[in-house]
Image (tube, rainbow, N blue to C red; front, side):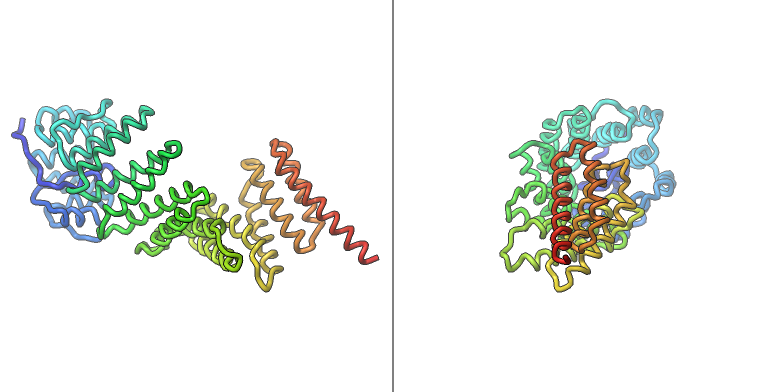
Length: 410
């Protein structure tokens, strides 16, 4: 058994996903150096080359670097990158102190131990790592409130020594509070804001943008007509878009932010004079969303944005409404080829109804009636009576317009 080794603090644990988030570093550490460790933009000292390789996903190469090193820290890190039951038992008899406690955290996190680890004898970010692991165990057991309690203690333990880890923990807390009924779910907003504040000026644009996205979605979910929350959601999505990420490398994030912005602009209360501008901005947001969204790679998101754009074009006030309606019809037609009737018959019926509405506004009545009849059947087969009635109401309006037109011609 080795003498107990006290690790230099703070350690970069918990900030990056497992297994990298379980690795520890020898030598002197500071908060600024910790930020450089987890930020992919920074080159690390040669003695930490294994961590730099692991951070980039080159785990096999990182393991080779660690095999060149001796001592308990290297042995622990080798276990993290290549966990095995035999090594676990050997290290249990070898390691002491903080490393021994971290070994149990790693064993549970890597699926080699059934019981959640104890946090006894740990403090700061190491305590927070153990508490986070206990929270995972509680969640897997269906116990959300104990998980929340563990994470709240973890945030308090690490916000001063490792703010980036505290930010991750606060974001996890927020996601758990979002699952709770009103009014408790509003605590999610507090923790997302806290997570963003904890990030400070750290050069981690991906992490920061993800936090802003989560805050925006939570504000949008909980807006319930509240202007302040809708405006906060708009700000959050704008922060995502100007957060320093390369759009081509984060296409889904950009597409989702533009789509959600468009939906917000459609629902925000404005003066009558602002309605036209609001709709135009929404349409532009949906167009930008589609520009970033690959139909084959992100079919569900693409379909949602395409539908939102088509619906908005129908009601966009402009000097060329016919062009907007024609484009809407074309967008719906493309959607029909993607949204399979067998998988989502009601959604398919909604597209048919919306397309029929656009066709009717263009005066193209026969195909509009044909699509409405098919939509009505789908709605009735799936007991969507209100939708079926709405489709039949539009059928009646079309027949009335045809009759008026015919009478005028006679």
